[in-house]
Amino acid sequence: MRFASQEFFDKLKESIMDENSDDSIYTELYEVLLHDTKYRIIRNVGFEDWEDVFQEVAWSVIRQLPRYLLNSEGMHEAQRQSWLNRIVDGKSASWLKKKYRMNKQKKEEQGSQKGSKQPKNIVLSLDMLHEINEETHTPIKLAEEYDSTKSPETIMVESEVSKKLLEKLTQLYSINTSPEKLIAFTYSRLIFPYMGDGVSGKPSKVYEHLYGFRLYDLYECMMDDLMSVIDGFIPKETFLPLREKLDIIDSDGHAIGEKSFNLQVRQITDGVHRIHKKLDADRDEETKEEQKQEQQEGGSDDDDRTPEF
Image 1 (cartoon, one colour):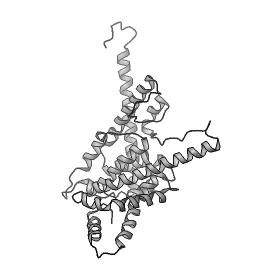
Image 2 (cartoon, helix red, strand yellow):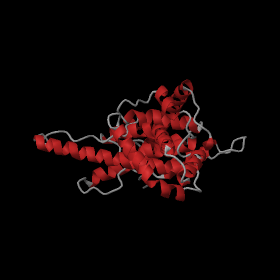
Image 3 (cartoon, helix red, strand yellow):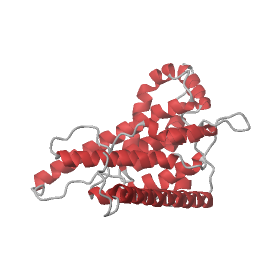
Image 4 (cartoon, rainbow, N blue to C red):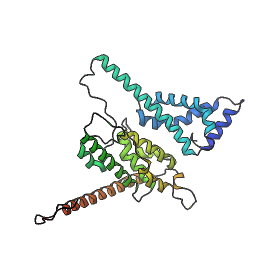
């Protein structure tokens, strides 16, 4: 039973409002929260600290239960899951900030701050965007705020990188394949490998983390996780082609997004390979088109016509 399910919501509400009810519901709530948040917390803060963060998440949920039960009566599961995800991500971010401050203070006390390397941000470095990395030799970021320490040339280049990144992501989610495979590819190639702490992008790990979860819920989590990895904001319009695939009504009269992720390891492996092959083919085609356009714009040595701008 999942925290966001209507079944558990009704059970939780009934037990909390029943004055004669015992405290067993809180034990069950703790176990449900543990099941639903453990791997998200691990992806956020790593194996070393996840239990401490989970305790803060559980306590925060319990404190907010009365308001949650009152305000989420008419919500669907994805909205309830998003509410829980926000708590998890908020507590994870607070923990990481606190840990960073403690580590920084410790280094300062030890006198080793000078000359030491600054902590690296977790950044997105994709095979399909290798050519973008080569242009800038800097991590791909989606900067939203103006940075006065950067030169205008650097800001212009980074803006172009961000634009190309969004175009590549839209291209990815427009590929004609199942939404399950696109979500699996995103976690396998774009998220898990850059989370660190033992969470790899192997198909077996993707299966272990995603299997059984509702596709709409995975879609929401995927957007949050990808933005966390690149440390920047991605407009929802970028994911629109994938959302449209999830909203398609199947023969049973239900949206595909309502189904659970049920790809097996072999299917994940095949899907990731085919998508990567498609992206490589599209990239090669784009390169040929660019080269062709450059040749047309350059003209021949005998062409003395004035170029048009």
